[in-house]
Amino acid sequence: MKRVTYISRFAKQLSGEEINEIGRVSQKNNSRDEITGVLISTADIFYQEIEGEEESIDTLFEKIKRDTRHKDVLCLKTEKNIEQRRYPKWSMKTVNIDAESNILMHPIRNLFQVLADSYGVIEKYTQPTVLKFVTNGINPLNIPSRETKKIILFCDIMAFSYFSSILNVQEVVSMTNTYLTACTQVLDRSGGEVTKYMGDCVMAYFDIEQADEAIRAGLDMLSGLERMREEVPKDSPLRFLHTGIGISSGSVIEGNIGSATKLDYTILGDAVNQAASLESLTRCLPRALAISQGVRDLSHGEWPFIQLGEYELKGGHDPVPVYSVDLLITEKPTNPLEIIDEISRTLEGTRLPG
Image (cartoon, rainbow, N blue to C red; front, side, top):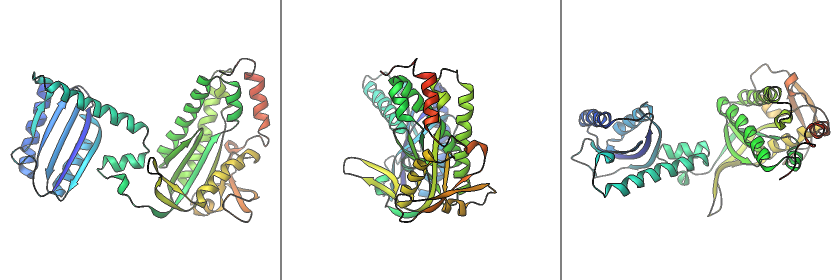
């Protein structure tokens, strides 16, 4: 048998009668499917344990995650091969803590609130793959490292050091957050995954079959930033928000990398170093998007590729061809000092560091 413990939040406020009705329906359905468990509610939180045959539990939990009456469903624990039920007499015992007057219910209510709030905070600091493992009841620490192939994308803000020298702290943070949000939204829509932020730099990866999605993501980032520069006020630092993007492909090691005190679920290898090198190379290229030959060869789209020359990349021994997409959106000043000069003329007299 299998037992799943999860916590979630109400999508909208539910009355005591609505909660009781959920319990009554659950009792009827669970009795039919030989599932037992307990449902506890307080404030806007559900805490539930369900146990039964593995197939029945998996089917029910998938249904629970699709239920529009609650959101932020997070699996706290999955137990397989259990031999005894914890709640053999309850097809679904429903407890509404808010309806109980017993003073002992107060610390229990606080416990669930703290638990839900803590996981909400953790979610913001946890990358999607790890969160997906946790949500599905899988302990990420038990996931073995593996060699696989990925498309890797690096991007960061051009002239960021200069921005940091002339803008105050709040403006630097606001610009960085705006940039990271814009990039992450594009990557999420494109099927990529952000594995980490490194200051103003984004590191992301795609499955090896997603070369075209990665290229499209790079172009969408450039288009999005261009629209932003056109729409913000003339004295906004965002008018000068440009980026460089590097995309490579190859074999990587994926898994838990770190120390006994801190781990990242990430990727590493020469292909990662090459993507970072390509991104850095955009500073001296006439294009803001630099693509490796491997990514170009994996692409099935009819992109107007253009070769920018041959360059030595980190992790390689010989110069290799570097490509871009021959579209207006990828063009940029060859010399990044042109951007800095424009920033200086517009902002330096009105912005003070602090």
